[in-house]
Length: 160
Image (cartoon, rainbow, N blue to C red):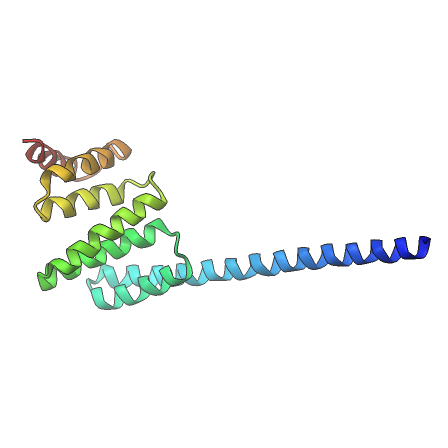
């Protein structure tokens, strides 16, 4: 009986080691995905900064494939869609932009950028009244926003 207990104890240790190893491997894979996704987001930002929307969209999508809960990624993709909307004057991009800002907010409601961006997109889309709460929330989260006066004008206009 003592021998069976020792074997059982050994097997339990082996199983717990395997679980630990499995957990370690999963964490290692997740960290690698995060590093890889950050590389894609940085590349997307580089292309966005030179207004190359198509390349930026390619890289931000690659980043979001690896890290689907990245609010900043959805906000960035919204900005890219806005650039595409400005270039192509196709409301398809404006609607996708609005979706992405909403997604960013649903993931992290503490970021001010998607609120301002969503409010601005709704304002441009003609939904000025709908834009107001998002613009107000964005300014509440960042009262020192550089374009505060412009946002306050949109709020005033949307409140009429």
